[in-house]
Every structure is written in structure tokens, then in C-alpha cells.
Image 1 (tube, rainbow, N blue to C red):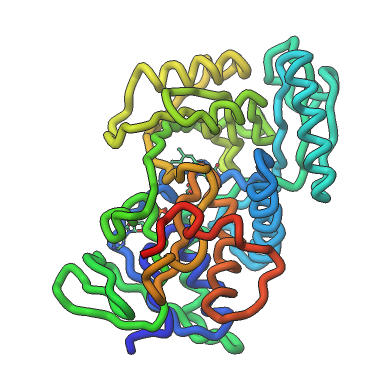
Image 2: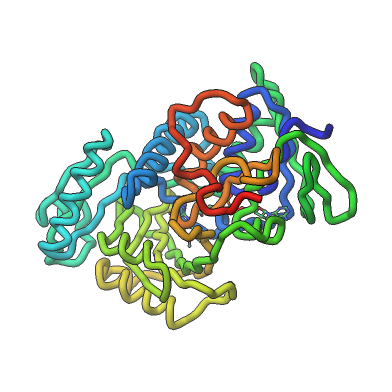
Length: 372
Ligand SMILES: Cc1cc2nc3c(=O)[nH]c(=O)nc-3n(C[C@H](O)[C@H](O)[C@H](O)COP(=O)(O)OP(=O)(O)OC[C@H]3O[C@@H](n4cnc5c(N)ncnc54)[C@H](O)[C@@H]3O)c2cc1C
């Protein structure tokens, strides 16, 4: 036996699972062929989302765990406790903000409605004439690639009952009962295997229902203090949950470096990582419409990445329905940085056969995958 648990994938989800398992005394081998998937392409907004009760439960539980982990993380992880402003453009969206406030407060999430004047005072760079916003103060942002590295590095230290994490940089070509086969033909064995390989998990388990949702992002040069909160239009939720077609929404994040990270777009059935100028231009026009000063800023880099989406928009967390010893931590779509922490707790509780305060039945892979 090479480890007690093998984790395939060192993105934020695999790293969080490895960290939580090592904290619970498991000896973990993480295998990743790099150079990185969605974790390296995303925004790292730690955000409570409430499109359905299961998403709200997972994201709010995740933020609670993030707060504990972030207290230990170093500055390289780029955490900022900036909060989110959900921007309402008109009276109808203001009603949507009030409805969102009701749902969040019912779940114990502190948030406040801002009128037009209060919004303009908090974020003077926004265009005039917006109706207001919902402020969710405990959301934040993190630099996910470094947070993943930090989590893996902690497992290397012998602290208390931590048994350690070792990392192997190679490709897994197949998974069998209790072992994985690597690209050089060698094998590694463990009684439990966690598949956290993002979108590419389909090459190892073709029955996993994952679909790519392409997203473009752009980052500006440094303009410290121009924006202080993650700014998201309320229409984002509509865009995020479309199940076909192409959409863009205003979503701007102030990085601790003073740069502005600008999103977001969503496209289905497109696995070409090339930048599409038409989509990028549409996304930037939308951002510029809310934040007119963007037109005078320098964009220094643009890129595209892929979210791994499931048919019902919820992740797959738990045992594979007909492969014993195989655990899935997949399909986190546009929320996987946020929900990596509670995912790790659910997976670790399953493997260690211990209780988890978050009920996991809504995320079980068996809901979307037929049993053998
Ligand atoms: C444009 C965009 C914006 C986003 N914004 C946000 C946001 O603001 N907030 C948020 O919470 N989430 C956001 N997300 C989503 C988030 O980034 C993902 O849900 C999350 O990073 C998924 O992490 P992961 O570890 O599951 O997968 P990945 O990060 O894709 O990691 C999978 C890893 O597995 C490895 N791997 C794959 N196959 C193999 C194999 N056969 N052998 C060995 N290794 C293998 C890969 O190399 C990779 O390192 C965004 C995503 C995108 C694309």
C-alpha cells in the first residue's frame, strides 16, 4: 500500500481534500500532471450563493471553514475580506436584492440593503443612476493557486497527528479497485481513491456527467483603491444558470495587488481555450457599462478557462455509485474555490466514517449516475 488515500488532482478541491484527510491522520498521496486546471484560470471569489437550498448550505458551510483555514494561511494566498456588492440596476433588481437578503438572513448570513446614495458612497467609480445593492460583508477573495499550494505544503509538516501529504507529478491513466495506473505503466495502491481531477475526470471515468462551461477573464494594471468590493450585477445569477447559449455579466474583483480582475462569460460546448475577441469584447463592454473608468485602464492579460458543470448545477461529492473505494469530488462549476472546503469535509468524513455537520445527500453522485 503506497498511501491510505490517493487523491487524483492538486487543484483547490484535491488540495483541500488532501489537507483535511491529513489533518484527520491519513497518509495521503496526491497525483497531478499539471500545469493546472480551473483553479489556475478562475476568479477566487469566496461567495455565498443561494440559487437553491443545497447550494446555500454548501457555500455557507464552506465559508465558515475557509475563515478557519485563512486564519492560518500566509499572505501569498492573497486573501482579502472585501465582501460582495450585488448591484441592482433598477427597481426590479432592487426587489431581487431584497428577496436575496431574506434568503441569506434566514440562513444566518449577515447582509444589508444599500440605497443608491449609500452604494455611490461605497463605490464612487460605479456609473450613476444604479438603484442600490445588497452588501454581503463576509464574502472575500483568495488567490486559489497559492491557497492550493499552501494546503499541500502543510501536509508535509509533521504537526500533531498529521500524517502527511506527498505529491507525485505524473498522469493517472486508469483507476482500478484499490490502485491507479500511471502513464509510465507503474501502479500506486490505496484502499481509498479520491477523484478530484476537474473536467478531465471524464477521461478516467467516462460515466461522470460533466460538461465544460468556458469563461473569459481579463486583468488590469494596478489601480489601488479604485474598487474596494467584489462587484457583481444581480443579473449574474441568470447568466450563471443558463443551461445553453452564451452569456456575459458584470463581475469585477479588486485584487490585493490593486489590479482589477474582470469577468465574466459563460459558453457551452466549446473546449477551445483560445480567446474569442467577440465574447471578450462583449464582456468588457458590459463591465464598462457598470464601471465607466475601465475604459481608461490598461488590460494587461486575458485568458479563458473551463468550469466543470453537472446537469443539475450541484457538485458530485461522495462515493462512486458502483466502484467501491472510489470517491468523487467533482463538478463544482463556477463555485469550486468557495466550496472546496466543505467538499473536503464531506469527503474526509465519508472516508473516515465520521459524522459531518453538513448533510451530504444533495451532492451524492448516485443522484445523477446509474448504479451498475
Ligand atoms: C473563468 C472562471 C471563473 C471562476 N470563478 C470562480 C470564483 O470566483 N469563485 C469560485 O468559487 N470558483 C470559481 N470558478 C470555479 C473554480 O475555479 C473551479 O470550480 C475549481 O477551481 C475547480 O477545482 P478542482 O480542483 O476541482 O479542478 P482543477 O482546478 O481543474 O484541478 C484538477 C487537477 O487535476 C489534474 N488532473 C486532471 N486529470 C489528471 C490525470 N489523469 N492525472 C493526474 N492529474 C490530473 C489537473 O492537472 C488539475 O491540476 C471559476 C472558474 C472559471 C473557469
